Image (cartoon, rainbow, N blue to C red; front, side):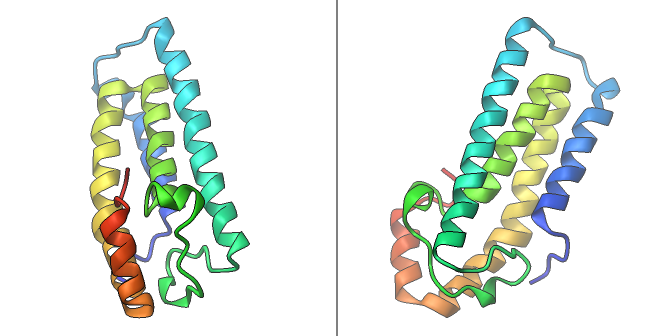
Length: 148
């Protein structure tokens, strides 16, 4: 794997960047932003926690830096809707932070997160899953979207 930075750290860095870059962008604050932010935060946490719980139930590794240690291919539950619900949850949490503090800058940083995680985390993970699970992973990839 090319990525040596755990995705939760990437998410934290992006979240902090969203907050501290707010002075560089016009602010679009209104009452509905808080409601949307809270909704997205709860949604992102539910998706993320659900994915972690599914991994634990299948007794496979949650460590994103060592995908070749996976002992099983998780395809049920939240994984039947998205191949990467943990990263989807992280992205939704970043969008929540964006609505709360820095909408325009946050969308840009969230897009950069999306690109970074896809290139340096998801693609290498998918190669590892293909090596480990072969046709089973190919079939899963053909029926389930990468993000949503």
